Length: 280
Image (cartoon, rainbow, N blue to C red):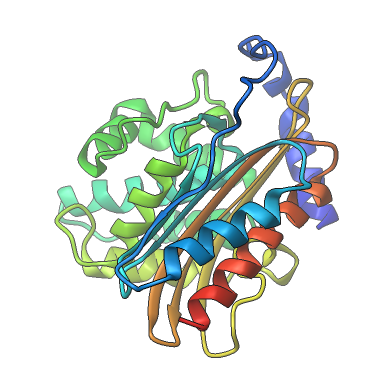
Protein backbone atom coordinates (compact mmCIF):
# COMPACT_ATOMS: atom_id res chain seq x y z
CA UNK A 1 0.00 0.00 0.00
CA UNK A 2 2.86 2.33 0.77
CA UNK A 3 4.03 2.42 -2.83
CA UNK A 4 0.56 3.30 -4.05
CA UNK A 5 0.25 6.12 -1.55
CA UNK A 6 3.66 7.53 -2.38
CA UNK A 7 2.83 7.60 -6.09
CA UNK A 8 -0.37 9.46 -5.34
CA UNK A 9 1.43 11.78 -2.94
CA UNK A 10 3.94 12.58 -5.67
CA UNK A 11 1.12 13.35 -8.07
CA UNK A 12 -0.66 15.53 -5.51
CA UNK A 13 2.55 17.47 -4.97
CA UNK A 14 2.66 18.39 -8.64
CA UNK A 15 -0.28 20.67 -8.15
CA UNK A 16 -3.50 18.79 -7.61
CA UNK A 17 -3.95 20.52 -4.28
CA UNK A 18 -3.80 23.86 -6.02
CA UNK A 19 -6.95 23.07 -7.95
CA UNK A 20 -10.09 24.91 -6.92
CA UNK A 21 -12.45 23.14 -4.60
CA UNK A 22 -16.05 24.15 -4.22
CA UNK A 23 -16.82 25.46 -0.76
CA UNK A 24 -18.17 22.85 1.57
CA UNK A 25 -21.91 22.99 1.92
CA UNK A 26 -23.37 24.38 5.14
CA UNK A 27 -24.67 22.12 7.87
CA UNK A 28 -26.14 18.91 6.54
CA UNK A 29 -29.86 18.72 5.99
CA UNK A 30 -31.87 17.48 8.91
CA UNK A 31 -32.62 14.19 7.16
CA UNK A 32 -29.71 12.25 5.69
CA UNK A 33 -30.43 10.39 2.45
CA UNK A 34 -31.55 6.80 2.94
CA UNK A 35 -30.44 3.62 1.20
CA UNK A 36 -32.99 2.63 -1.46
CA UNK A 37 -33.28 -0.95 -2.76
CA UNK A 38 -35.55 -2.79 -5.19
CA UNK A 39 -35.47 -6.47 -6.17
CA UNK A 40 -37.41 -9.12 -8.04
CA UNK A 41 -36.43 -11.53 -5.25
CA UNK A 42 -38.87 -11.47 -2.34
CA UNK A 43 -37.40 -10.01 0.84
CA UNK A 44 -33.97 -9.24 -0.64
CA UNK A 45 -34.44 -5.49 -1.06
CA UNK A 46 -35.53 -5.01 2.55
CA UNK A 47 -32.66 -7.14 3.84
CA UNK A 48 -30.04 -5.26 1.79
CA UNK A 49 -31.45 -1.87 2.78
CA UNK A 50 -31.38 -2.81 6.45
CA UNK A 51 -27.90 -4.34 6.36
CA UNK A 52 -26.23 -1.59 4.28
CA UNK A 53 -27.81 1.05 6.51
CA UNK A 54 -26.55 -0.78 9.58
CA UNK A 55 -23.03 -1.13 8.13
CA UNK A 56 -22.89 2.65 7.64
CA UNK A 57 -24.63 3.66 10.85
CA UNK A 58 -21.49 4.48 12.80
CA UNK A 59 -19.24 5.59 9.92
CA UNK A 60 -18.37 9.24 9.37
CA UNK A 61 -17.76 10.86 6.00
CA UNK A 62 -19.99 11.18 2.94
CA UNK A 63 -20.66 7.75 1.45
CA UNK A 64 -22.34 6.81 -1.83
CA UNK A 65 -23.29 3.25 -2.75
CA UNK A 66 -24.45 1.46 -5.87
CA UNK A 67 -25.36 -2.21 -6.29
CA UNK A 68 -26.85 -3.96 -9.31
CA UNK A 69 -27.39 -7.71 -9.60
CA UNK A 70 -28.59 -8.87 -13.02
CA UNK A 71 -29.74 -12.27 -11.77
CA UNK A 72 -32.26 -11.04 -9.20
CA UNK A 73 -32.81 -7.61 -10.83
CA UNK A 74 -31.68 -6.05 -7.58
CA UNK A 75 -30.63 -2.41 -7.32
CA UNK A 76 -29.48 -0.45 -4.25
CA UNK A 77 -28.44 3.19 -4.23
CA UNK A 78 -27.32 5.84 -1.78
CA UNK A 79 -26.33 9.36 -2.93
CA UNK A 80 -26.30 8.05 -6.50
CA UNK A 81 -25.79 11.51 -8.05
CA UNK A 82 -23.38 13.02 -5.51
CA UNK A 83 -20.12 14.02 -7.23
CA UNK A 84 -16.72 12.90 -5.92
CA UNK A 85 -13.13 13.52 -7.03
CA UNK A 86 -12.43 10.31 -8.92
CA UNK A 87 -8.85 9.62 -7.82
CA UNK A 88 -7.68 6.43 -9.58
CA UNK A 89 -11.15 4.97 -10.20
CA UNK A 90 -11.18 7.08 -13.41
CA UNK A 91 -8.50 4.79 -14.82
CA UNK A 92 -11.17 2.30 -15.91
CA UNK A 93 -12.79 5.11 -17.91
CA UNK A 94 -9.41 5.99 -19.45
CA UNK A 95 -8.89 2.38 -20.55
CA UNK A 96 -12.45 2.12 -21.87
CA UNK A 97 -11.95 5.33 -23.87
CA UNK A 98 -8.69 4.02 -25.33
CA UNK A 99 -10.35 0.79 -26.46
CA UNK A 100 -13.48 2.56 -27.73
CA UNK A 101 -11.35 4.91 -29.83
CA UNK A 102 -9.19 2.07 -31.18
CA UNK A 103 -12.33 0.19 -32.20
CA UNK A 104 -13.60 3.28 -34.07
CA UNK A 105 -10.35 3.32 -36.06
CA UNK A 106 -10.41 -0.46 -36.56
CA UNK A 107 -7.04 -1.02 -34.91
CA UNK A 108 -5.46 -2.97 -32.08
CA UNK A 109 -3.65 -1.31 -29.17
CA UNK A 110 0.04 -0.70 -29.80
CA UNK A 111 2.62 -2.43 -27.58
CA UNK A 112 3.20 0.92 -25.87
CA UNK A 113 -0.51 1.38 -25.17
CA UNK A 114 -0.84 -2.18 -23.84
CA UNK A 115 2.11 -1.67 -21.49
CA UNK A 116 0.72 1.63 -20.20
CA UNK A 117 -2.79 0.18 -19.81
CA UNK A 118 -1.55 -2.78 -17.78
CA UNK A 119 0.49 -0.56 -15.44
CA UNK A 120 -2.41 1.88 -15.09
CA UNK A 121 -4.94 -0.74 -13.99
CA UNK A 122 -2.94 -3.47 -12.24
CA UNK A 123 -0.54 -1.17 -10.34
CA UNK A 124 -2.56 2.08 -10.44
CA UNK A 125 0.45 3.73 -12.10
CA UNK A 126 -0.09 7.49 -12.36
CA UNK A 127 2.60 8.25 -14.94
CA UNK A 128 1.09 5.68 -17.31
CA UNK A 129 -2.34 7.23 -16.78
CA UNK A 130 -1.07 10.74 -17.48
CA UNK A 131 0.49 9.57 -20.76
CA UNK A 132 -2.74 7.92 -21.93
CA UNK A 133 -4.85 10.89 -20.76
CA UNK A 134 -2.68 13.28 -22.78
CA UNK A 135 -2.71 10.98 -25.81
CA UNK A 136 -6.50 10.72 -25.80
CA UNK A 137 -7.29 14.35 -25.01
CA UNK A 138 -10.55 15.70 -23.62
CA UNK A 139 -12.40 15.47 -26.94
CA UNK A 140 -12.07 11.68 -27.11
CA UNK A 141 -12.69 11.24 -23.39
CA UNK A 142 -15.88 13.31 -23.60
CA UNK A 143 -16.83 11.38 -26.74
CA UNK A 144 -16.66 8.11 -24.85
CA UNK A 145 -18.63 9.51 -21.91
CA UNK A 146 -21.36 10.59 -24.32
CA UNK A 147 -21.42 7.19 -26.04
CA UNK A 148 -21.58 5.47 -22.64
CA UNK A 149 -24.37 7.72 -21.38
CA UNK A 150 -22.15 8.84 -18.48
CA UNK A 151 -23.68 12.32 -18.40
CA UNK A 152 -22.77 13.06 -14.77
CA UNK A 153 -19.00 12.53 -15.24
CA UNK A 154 -16.91 15.68 -15.74
CA UNK A 155 -13.27 15.16 -16.83
CA UNK A 156 -10.63 16.90 -14.72
CA UNK A 157 -9.22 20.08 -16.26
CA UNK A 158 -5.58 20.89 -17.05
CA UNK A 159 -4.47 17.26 -17.01
CA UNK A 160 -5.75 16.58 -13.49
CA UNK A 161 -7.47 13.31 -14.35
CA UNK A 162 -7.73 12.42 -10.64
CA UNK A 163 -10.04 15.40 -10.12
CA UNK A 164 -12.56 14.10 -12.65
CA UNK A 165 -16.01 14.31 -11.06
CA UNK A 166 -17.72 10.93 -10.85
CA UNK A 167 -20.99 9.58 -9.43
CA UNK A 168 -22.30 6.17 -8.43
CA UNK A 169 -24.84 6.34 -11.27
CA UNK A 170 -22.15 6.73 -13.94
CA UNK A 171 -19.71 4.25 -12.44
CA UNK A 172 -22.47 1.64 -12.38
CA UNK A 173 -23.25 2.44 -16.04
CA UNK A 174 -19.60 1.83 -16.89
CA UNK A 175 -19.50 -1.47 -15.00
CA UNK A 176 -22.66 -2.60 -16.80
CA UNK A 177 -20.99 -1.86 -20.15
CA UNK A 178 -17.89 -3.78 -19.14
CA UNK A 179 -19.87 -6.85 -18.04
CA UNK A 180 -22.48 -7.34 -20.79
CA UNK A 181 -22.63 -7.20 -24.58
CA UNK A 182 -23.25 -3.68 -25.93
CA UNK A 183 -22.54 -1.44 -28.93
CA UNK A 184 -20.06 0.86 -27.13
CA UNK A 185 -17.34 -1.64 -26.19
CA UNK A 186 -16.48 -4.73 -28.23
CA UNK A 187 -16.47 -8.15 -26.58
CA UNK A 188 -12.67 -8.21 -26.84
CA UNK A 189 -12.43 -4.77 -25.20
CA UNK A 190 -14.68 -5.85 -22.35
CA UNK A 191 -12.67 -9.01 -21.80
CA UNK A 192 -9.43 -7.01 -21.77
CA UNK A 193 -10.72 -4.54 -19.17
CA UNK A 194 -11.94 -7.37 -16.93
CA UNK A 195 -8.68 -9.27 -17.36
CA UNK A 196 -6.63 -6.32 -16.10
CA UNK A 197 -9.08 -5.57 -13.26
CA UNK A 198 -8.65 -9.20 -12.22
CA UNK A 199 -4.86 -8.84 -12.10
CA UNK A 200 -4.63 -5.93 -9.64
CA UNK A 201 -1.58 -6.30 -7.40
CA UNK A 202 -2.27 -7.92 -4.02
CA UNK A 203 -1.80 -4.72 -1.97
CA UNK A 204 -4.65 -3.09 -3.92
CA UNK A 205 -7.22 -5.88 -3.69
CA UNK A 206 -9.13 -4.24 -0.87
CA UNK A 207 -12.56 -2.64 -1.06
CA UNK A 208 -15.54 -4.10 -2.87
CA UNK A 209 -14.15 -7.69 -3.15
CA UNK A 210 -14.05 -7.93 0.67
CA UNK A 211 -16.26 -10.77 1.88
CA UNK A 212 -16.90 -12.28 -1.55
CA UNK A 213 -17.18 -16.07 -1.41
CA UNK A 214 -14.44 -18.34 -2.73
CA UNK A 215 -16.52 -19.29 -5.77
CA UNK A 216 -17.00 -15.67 -6.86
CA UNK A 217 -14.79 -14.24 -9.61
CA UNK A 218 -13.99 -10.56 -9.00
CA UNK A 219 -12.56 -7.58 -10.90
CA UNK A 220 -11.69 -4.38 -9.03
CA UNK A 221 -10.29 -0.87 -9.34
CA UNK A 222 -9.70 1.32 -6.32
CA UNK A 223 -8.83 4.97 -5.84
CA UNK A 224 -7.45 7.01 -2.97
CA UNK A 225 -6.49 10.67 -2.69
CA UNK A 226 -5.98 13.10 0.18
CA UNK A 227 -6.81 16.79 -0.21
CA UNK A 228 -7.07 19.80 2.07
CA UNK A 229 -10.88 19.67 2.06
CA UNK A 230 -13.02 16.56 2.63
CA UNK A 231 -9.93 14.63 3.85
CA UNK A 232 -9.29 11.33 2.11
CA UNK A 233 -11.30 10.25 -0.92
CA UNK A 234 -11.37 6.43 -0.92
CA UNK A 235 -13.33 4.59 -3.63
CA UNK A 236 -13.80 1.06 -4.93
CA UNK A 237 -15.62 -0.31 -7.98
CA UNK A 238 -15.93 -4.03 -8.62
CA UNK A 239 -17.72 -6.65 -10.68
CA UNK A 240 -18.58 -10.11 -9.36
CA UNK A 241 -19.89 -13.34 -10.87
CA UNK A 242 -20.68 -16.72 -9.35
CA UNK A 243 -22.97 -18.41 -6.88
CA UNK A 244 -25.91 -17.73 -9.17
CA UNK A 245 -25.29 -13.98 -9.25
CA UNK A 246 -23.83 -11.42 -11.68
CA UNK A 247 -23.39 -8.10 -9.89
CA UNK A 248 -21.43 -4.90 -9.57
CA UNK A 249 -20.72 -2.65 -6.60
CA UNK A 250 -19.57 0.97 -6.44
CA UNK A 251 -18.71 2.67 -3.14
CA UNK A 252 -17.46 6.26 -3.20
CA UNK A 253 -16.40 8.08 -0.01
CA UNK A 254 -14.84 11.32 1.13
CA UNK A 255 -14.44 13.01 4.49
CA UNK A 256 -12.32 10.11 5.76
CA UNK A 257 -9.72 10.88 8.44
CA UNK A 258 -7.30 8.33 6.96
CA UNK A 259 -7.10 6.08 3.93
CA UNK A 260 -7.62 3.01 6.11
CA UNK A 261 -10.76 4.50 7.65
CA UNK A 262 -12.25 4.80 4.16
CA UNK A 263 -11.22 1.24 3.28
CA UNK A 264 -12.92 -0.07 6.42
CA UNK A 265 -16.12 1.79 5.54
CA UNK A 266 -16.18 0.36 2.00
CA UNK A 267 -15.44 -3.16 3.20
CA UNK A 268 -18.20 -3.01 5.78
CA UNK A 269 -20.70 -2.32 2.98
CA UNK A 270 -19.21 -4.91 0.62
CA UNK A 271 -19.26 -7.65 3.26
CA UNK A 272 -23.02 -7.40 3.89
CA UNK A 273 -23.83 -7.16 0.17
CA UNK A 274 -21.86 -10.32 -0.65
CA UNK A 275 -23.39 -12.11 2.33
CA UNK A 276 -26.99 -11.16 1.51
CA UNK A 277 -26.68 -12.06 -2.16
CA UNK A 278 -25.03 -15.39 -1.34
CA UNK A 279 -27.92 -16.24 0.96
CA UNK A 280 -30.58 -15.29 -1.59
